[in-house]
Image (cartoon, rainbow, N blue to C red):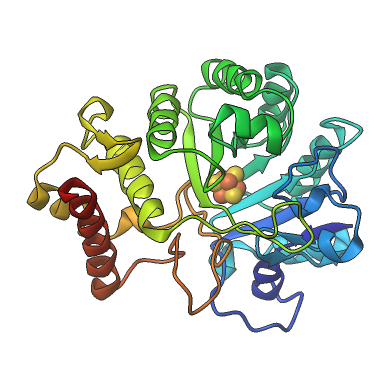
Length: 322
Ligand code: SF4
């Protein structure tokens, strides 16, 4: 058995659910009840109802044969990538190597893996098994919040990520979640450090989920998320330098660019779309349809881009003028 995100199952014809938006990556989830007990994640819980979710999304379970047949037609459905996510299995990476063997039989799409790995040898074995990119998720940006929320030490996971990035250039990614106790200075410093190590970043906003230890906390303010998102985009595109960013009390107030230059760079709206591996759009992973959108799963309309840029500029001015 394997689980699929509700949108993936609908797109592949395994369910009759109608979605507001469809994914451009097939999202698969291996395992149940993770050995890690991250406070924000439903997969660390033992309650069956809670376990059905990851992010805001539900993940129905299917027999592998059914999924295999559906995935063989994935490209014709417009899918560009497969993302295999996994709880931390007791058996280590063995179940993942088995899944990879089966995936490679039915699809030529590139496969991303987001899973707990213990060392760079495991990462190399997974790449040899056909994985295109591996995400070692840092998730929590502030080191002491990391210890509280995920357990263990952030510096150990960063060391592993950097070692893998050196051994497997261009193959490593990470997930960062904004709104877990970090400041904007900490977030953008982390982004700058990861980009310099050639690690691809997928940025998310914290979502309080029922049944988790953090269900009563608030998601980050959208204007703060926009500043991190824009900063991440500018650094990734080489359009700005972290040393020119200005902060007031660890809140970003300037990217060190003229207003018009900033508007021009952000004018196509790409900065506000889902980031990470190419082809990954994760519709409504962070947001509810009709509510404020943190990561757009598609190209923004002119009006949406103008609104996002205006919100960003206003928030910079507001603080700088205070
Ligand atoms: S960025 Fe997207 S495709 Fe890549 S590992 Fe993360 S969720 Fe999967």
